[in-house]
Length: 293
Image (cartoon, rainbow, N blue to C red; front, side, top):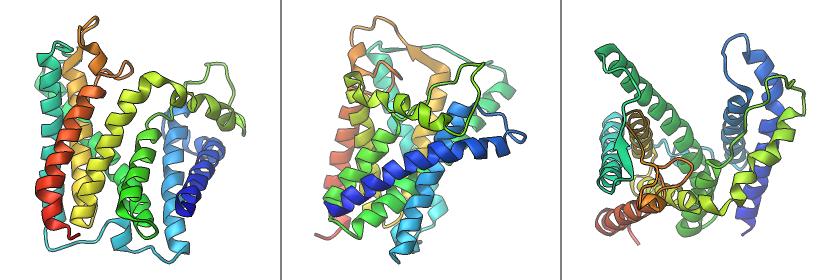
């Protein structure tokens, strides 16, 4: 319990640090990149989370490739990333096939069908998937889960890291008004509203679906001993979601529309059921055979 409370304290510090540091860093980065402040503050907060967890591991003398999830075994990590990325894409294709079959989604192209446009869309999806997979897995299944495993048993470590991973997706900063100035405390002023989605019960289905995905990724990390497959799996899922968003859309008034979240119309109870089935199969036929005890 002490370890969990300590990590919760770190999370609070990360949120405050991200809100405070985002302003001076935004001023420095403005000439180099054009990014709205509400998106910038989220990225700075993620970076603060990475620094905080790795700093904790370093100060407690636990920072090493094994704890961080980058221990290389005999298998080629490049091949592991590619194979798991294909598995992530397959998971999302199954989910999307169900959504189309249940008339929750419909085909709707949102890009030019010319070959150059298709190539650009695919490249953007892949790059986004790789960046998100690398950063989030390094933080959640790497440093966070690895650090927890040094202090508590696997079950609470998996549950807590998956809950934090899921909750992180509900930290959403809203755009500032066009005439609003950015002062040193602007990030802190935006923070309470950014946390407001946690109190919305309609987000429970999405939270549970993301939590289940976090559990699946945690099992992969525990079974493999590193996060390379996690990175690939996560990257494949994100890339597939990007491509699906370019080619399909939610069908308003769908009879079974309650199976997807009202916010993103993708994740929800249907995704939760699918991921739960995958977790059961993975745990029963792969994890238990390879992980002793």
